[in-house]
Image 1 (tube, rainbow, N blue to C red):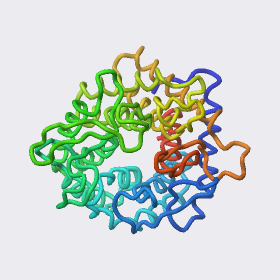
Image 2: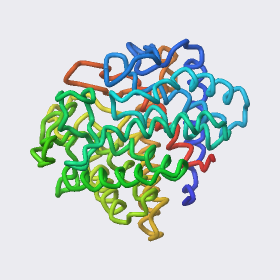
Image 3: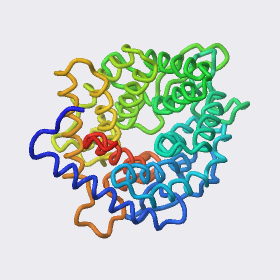
Length: 379
């Protein structure tokens, strides 16, 4: 990892310590937080299934994920015990075939936990979740289906840029459990995503639609962005991180080049304070921002920098990610705001639906903490 420029380390450490401090509020919650409402965490049951923004069921893995990060930094055993207890509460989700988001559910929680503890049921649960996720792969179009119950026609031809983040679970399970088929379909999905979800200018579509029977590509569109052709920053951030990690796991330099292109496009459109707008192409100067996109992008760009063999390019990317983190800490944190339970303010989950706009988002909290841990070399 590249060295942090003088004077920047203390601010990054303050930001990470704030993550741990704000985690204490999360630990008091009986269920799993997904977003704040007027600054107060709202929670979801781990028994909810599928893609339901109204209860955030795909975010349950981030709470134990933050506990694992806190343990890595402090060595405190209480974080391990609580993370294990939280993970056990959604072990049954390994069989949830209604969503592509099993990577979000199981990678920060079960995979990270297994790497720390070696606990067998974490390993077995994550491998089984990967096998369940693989059932959503459509060999006709070589993509992982985003939405709709298996066996139905509901949105059967749609995939998303978000799904790139779920490939890590498949690659890990292939390596750990020995089923190379999982890596093969993850690689195929990444190839399809690079061809269809990435535009020539390096921006990304949120959604791409195929004919599910023939696999014929139809069109790109959006589900949460400003318009079909706009650049939605959180999707761009998912793409940066997803392609950077897939490049490492699959041994594919071409995926690294895609991540590089996406990172340049994202960074070129950031405002001076480094806090992304909710959509780069919303013409309203008063439009809300999305700090979670910045946190995800920072984590992904640090991964990209670590993968690059060119030291000069790696250093540029590393400093850009640090700039992002410091901008979020300065302009979007809850420092001095005891009325706010989240650490990272100004997140926008789903603007068109009016859902969790200008709030703290659990995925923003997790990736901000993870990116800070990467920057500070907390392992």
